[in-house]
Length: 114
Length: 113
Image (cartoon, rainbow over all chains, first blue to last red; front, side, top):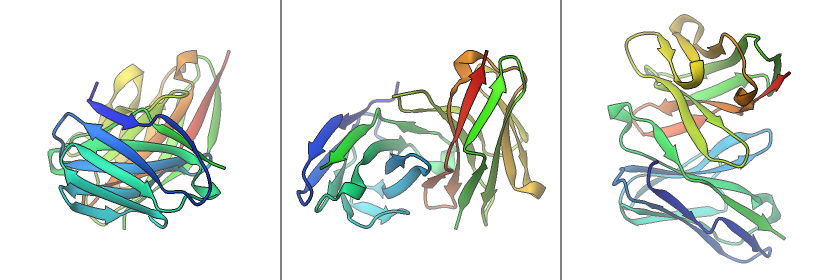
């Protein structure tokens, strides 16, 4: 299995508080992704990174920010959590699209905003 | 921009029957296409992928998919469903040269005894 660790695995937080989710990889892959999974919507891309300090927005980036200060870590921050951000969050990594490689996924973080 | 549409959010088949899960994509450049499977309370794992070359791609667990450029489709099939195939299936496309990986809405496969 690819070395991807998401933390925490479960979190309950209050509306209006900031929350940071961490994705850590040991594969030295260039690309890292954050998705949210909600019933009826599949996986929607929040932000992704194509290198250290290189990030871009996905389909549903409002209310989220990311940082990647080193290859192995990709942080997702909810600036001020809202109930609509209750979801399961998945991190994924990929070596390179040009090498036709697949993306590997973490086990997910279940976030509940009350 | 690239996009993926999966036709049918739920598909139900009998054990031993043909499985057909539909995926259509939109891409302005030759696409890289993927099918992933997610079992309950787990992450996603790759079933198969199309990059270049042979348009019929074989994956794990007896699944295969055919890339049809003229139809912009990448449908997933399996000749004979097994109870263990019950899961959610996602089609995905890489977005051009950016490395952005876009998923469809998912199709839940139910297999009846």
